[in-house]
Image 1: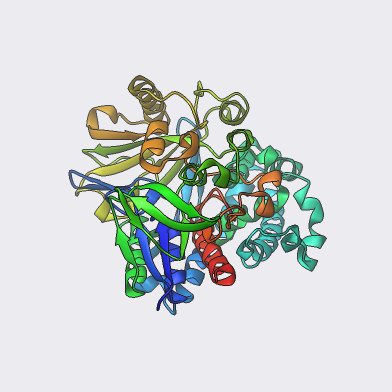
Image 2: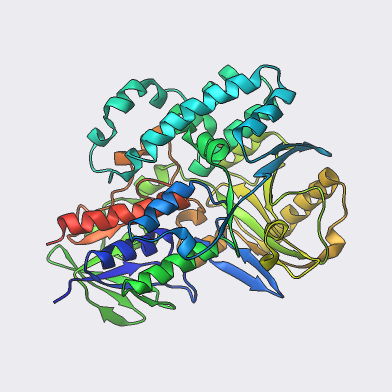
Length: 487
């Protein structure tokens, strides 16, 4: 008789775990609270426009390929990938931007124009980042965070000092031009912490950016979700949508089943890719590993205010990915991490997938996604959303020298309250728990419950951390622990 596994959630980590467990011989059922799968990576389709609700950056293609290759597949079996050129552009003032192209040589040339001698420094910096990438992404992140010894290898011992310095210090030691500094510090925002709180070792994100490049799956990031769903179904996984979990049943210290829509579903093990804090709230108090005080003291990655906008014309002076760094980053970071509040002058990011992908918008029109990083747990009201939409639209029009507000067909927004309602996200965070030194590897919440036998966790609040590639890896790690410890 087959062993059975229930999986809570259908984001990247949950779907990945479902595939690995099905491959290992489990009969797997996935329970998703929303009407469509994908978790934070769902899709919005409206009036002929298609938006990725969550992740829009496809970095670290090697991690995706490693995932599919574990099932003797390739990403190309499910979706087509295009390397973006330019990868993105960064605005610093009106008509003043730097374009990041698709090779290190081109990027180095752009740096040299800004700061004499910086191209040579950049190549040296990226070479070290590549070395860290090879250690981290090809080795360290595939450890389950069970022991500090996982971090101790001959390669990491040589780089020990990089765990006690930080990205901000390293970048500013080599580069003096503030614009280049901002560009080099930008990728660590994906890790959910300030550059000053992110260990130097994490500069491997700069290699992901400049060394490997930025890609776009045709028809959007949701195609990756659909690809993993197809793989899961090929492996025999059952997926149930509109199935929120009301309770995790524990008997004699062991997981016994889950309750969804009033019905009990027993299985041998359960893996939750839902918000970790929320998952533990489904347990009776004695079975929770982490207190409210524990979660409250943790450094969380930002939440976001997002707008999905349909325009009735094509926009100019923007690329598929465009960053707006025309205001003080330090003050915005302070409003996220130090004194949580709505930022007075926020940096923001915009994505125009229809610049690359004709599937994103009707002909002659443009799909725009705008994102403002915010502290989690802020008050979120329609009035605040509207205020900030007007703020960034005014700056956007000025910086890119065009009038666009009168060309808006519609806009939809998504913010703190939606992250809580749709994903049960702790304080409405968007990206999970930050990868600071004290929240790395074995210091993150555990994949395997210490208090409940046969209860496992996956996703961005556990190892290895925030982001889509780490979530895929997290699914594999959770499944590996299940097969190792379940009896």
